[in-house]
Amino acid sequence: MGKGLRPALCMATCQAFGGTEEQSLKSAVALEMIHNAFLVHDDVEDNSECRHRMPTLQAEQGVPIAVNIGDAMNALSLRLVRENIPMLGHQLTQRIYEEFEHLMLKSLEGQASELGWVRDNRCDITEADYLQMILNKTCWYSFMHPCRIGGLIASKDTLDLDRFNKFGYFMGAAFQIQDDVLNLVGDSHQYGKEIGGDIWEGKRTLMLVHLFKQGTPSERDVLQAFMAKPRGERSEEEVSWVIQRMQDYGSIDYAIAVAHQFAEAALEEFSVAYQDTPNSGEKAFIPKLIHYMISRNL
Amino acid sequence: MGKGLRPALCMATCQAFGGTEEQSLKSAVALEMIHNAFLVHDDVEDNSECRHRMPTLQAEQGVPIAVNIGDAMNALSLRLVRENIPMLGHQLTQRIYEEFEHLMLKSLEGQASELGWVRDNRCDITEADYLQMILNKTCWYSFMHPCRIGGLIASKDTLDLDRFNKFGYFMGAAFQIQDDVLNLVGDSHQYGKEIGGDIWEGKRTLMLVHLFKQGTPSERDVLQAFMAKPRGERSEEEVSWVIQRMQDYGSIDYAIAVAHQFAEAALEEFSVAYQDTPNSGEKAFIPKLIHYMISRNL
Image (cartoon, rainbow over all chains, first blue to last red; front, side, top):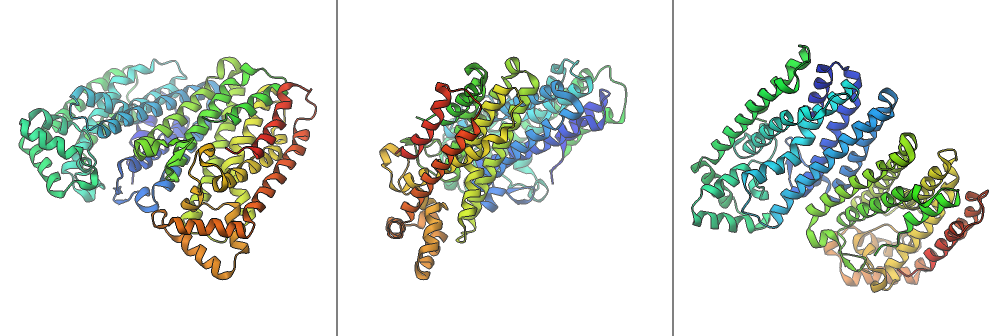
């Protein structure tokens, strides 16, 4: 069901920098597993009904069991990291573990911002706030750290891993903004989640930030009152009104354009981050991932 | 608010085996923090309103924020484990980390059993099932591993840590059964949680197992129908009926007697697990903990 973006990016980077598939395999699997652990708790936190065209774990088994299973998946992903010791040794494994620790804490911090904005009904979120939030919530764990971990393993900790940060951030921003757009205009069958779900959940997306900035004062008041309601009190009609206003003000087109700009910037940063590496199929695969991300419809 | 049992047991054991306070400090703090991370998610899973005489995090901030904060506390507790490296070195820290990994997975496994029994309305739980569940849910992380980690650090990984298992299991069983009894008959102000909360939540306790075994067939049917209801549909009257039946059949007295037997067995195992260690204030503190646990009313 998943796309396997994170393990693919980690393994391709490891090989682009001269490492082997085998060396990064455990870390790549751990990245995919911790991603899925995040999804299980995210679906609890967002009260989401549907993911990958299937009922979410919390919809099917209830919140208690979903929280417990997410915790177990999290612990098991860290066990996979530890299983690197026989092949990579204590010190390198410890460095990989540090990368995982940072990606966990950053994702949780980004999630805390997003949940706090919903709780406080913050209607003054700027583009800079939004980008900081997705840097934490998405870019670190999904793009920056997969590259960093691949480079770390291949170089046996001799590479300055910050070389991947801009590249991963640009790629992650393109991905997350595109994901938010698909949540509004995607085909629900292909996308696999409820269309408009972010609006039902009160998520602060780039489109919402844009609409708050572009709308008239009275539209802003209506929007703020809508956002103040708990999910259960929002109506289909209100959600349609929000999407219509976003279309009228070009908020969705604006977000698509920003996603494309981030993707272009990522392509440029790719040539910086992966400079000095020989041409290889694995290296060539990475820019293809960027194209895929902004042209995908699921 | 907390009693600090787990860090106290870890540090006292480390010192009883010749280690220093400083050597076990980070691990002891990590034990207390991971315990609190468990409590935050437990309160979500049990939909508990009250803990330590205060509203739970989920009651005050809602499920999404409580899930996220529990995740962060969990990650931060593992960071504390990693902070042992400068003082204890890579290999010993790795061994401590393995102990934490095992305690996490065992607790989650115990919690999974308990949640599954509620989900499936299992009314055929035996005493052996119950003891296996609390071994996983409580004994490993609260008693067995705190001792093991203290001994591990003090001995620099030269001790067979299984020497603490029986002692920690007996102590943990005494603690958990006493905790379940206090949930029924305690003073809510001192105990800090809702009295009868376990019955409202459908928890399978030793008293409930006893009542299912001792009650008449028609009482068992009433009890099973009550247990099948979601929490919101249970009434004060029904909960009182369950407590009354437990009193009539001596289920509570039985559980108190079992807790005392486990405490006595723990005292005997103490002298085995801590044999060959010189007398010290720290060593003498440990049996006092056992007495405290079964005489406590909070």
